[in-house]
Image 1 (cartoon, rainbow, N blue to C red):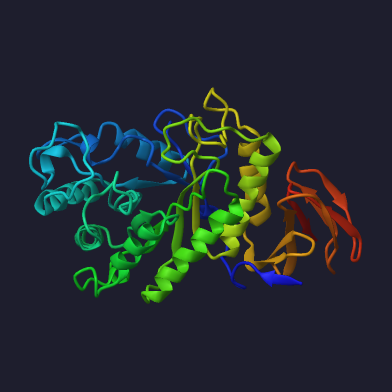
Image 2: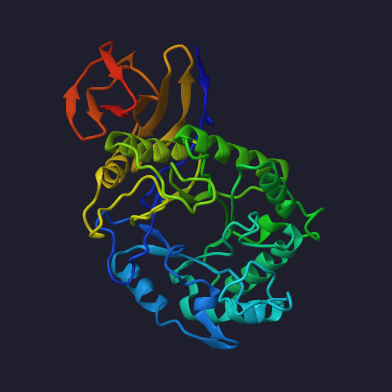
Length: 392
């Protein structure tokens, strides 16, 4: 008996759903042409943009924004973290960035400078993972104050700009408690965050051996937290990868090309089915503690995972997600999509193989490698951990 795995109605998939972190932006644009790019890994946080009190340097960020625009892509800038010289914590070492609460006046001046320069040509994420002590050592209420102040400034300068709440991680109970308190006016100083920002964000990394199904369980958890706090915001998946060691300081063990490709496709399929509006894969880079790389060492050539990104975009673009189910007996995940009145399905297992019957109205089966064969209603279709798209 199949059970519902995601909500029955998910995302209407646009090109902006398929995002990437692009650390080489300004020099190289990803050849897979994402419509949105995340600048988390581009060293353009607050301390790099305000080099000394009141002195701003946009010479690194400007070419990134320009190159994104030339490729019809929208960049997402992460505004935090705190320069040591603007921290409210005394006695800091002169490190360039601190996970501390910034001076509010300085924060407002910085946000004003950035928003005045870039208006709505970029999207704005307020802070990276403030429910992790390495990124923010203040309270949920202090982060809420920073978010509301920034959102008011950005929307005042550029009403059409998109402001995204800080990305939250969700693996630990303490992290979920922080997220709930951040969005709860009774615990954050009376601020209704949903009235100020345009989207909520999560970084749903599972544990080191976790799967896309484990990651989406964290996404669904975040949606429950938002619903419990009566927050009605689109949800963005701001950062995801797999096989990442705890702590992020030891090398990851890369999976096979087959597993990497499967995880990329399952990630985007499941997020669409869960109603997530954007997914930014980390990233178009090779990094020692990320298990799955989309690009070869030259920064240009797609890996198998990079090709899977292109494949799943072709499957899903323009589709309306209608949810996923999981059959405990067969182990088959099935996700339904509708485009132009025609229904298609994506099927896979986590382990082993199974068979499904081709639904009415389908004519083709395409593998995650792009090989297409014919089918018709009632035919047996073999399903493995390599997803297949069954369509008209």
